[in-house]
Image (tube, rainbow, N blue to C red):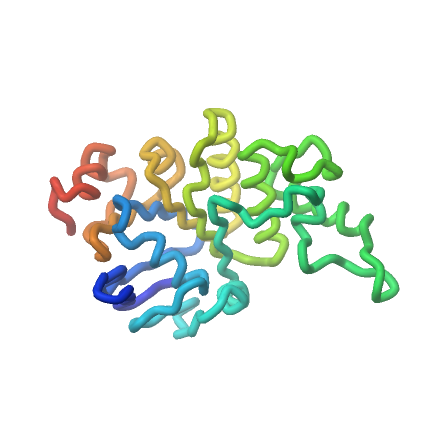
Length: 241
């Protein structure tokens, strides 16, 4: 997926200014910048939560219009926000197949199939959940994040936009999410991670796009940069590309 010259304004405030962006198959891309840099606005446009003012979005080289979340899902794009949009009082399998529950006799939810298919998706991602009968509200932050990602994978999506996936998580939960992101990459999925966590960036990312004041100011491959340079590019202490 890529964008060409995407712009978005909110009244007199420029949220995005002619932003070019690209994410490749089997890549983990970190999208970074200070508050107000435009990264969340870009992700919302790609996910269908906001409409662009101008510019072009391409998926597999074809120009597409993404005007709603359902449009994004049609092109295999899924966004996992910090609030996750999970139903805490429903169990794991019910959340994974929320709105797409398998039926038997055309009217009854096929709970057995839903549990079996959920277990297959979780096993495929090497996600460990104590029991699929647990309500999601009883799970840890890392487990909840994993369930949200598993739901997107179960829908057949292939481009994952993750908004601060390790925020407020402990070391063990962060390691669980890092392993999950690497697993998605191994399955030829594309993962965009918005994060302020430099440790997380240098653990999982292949490439880093830095934004500042609504513009893309630099791109770095992880192997060719340092945490100090990334901080300098975010703050403007270093020049961009």
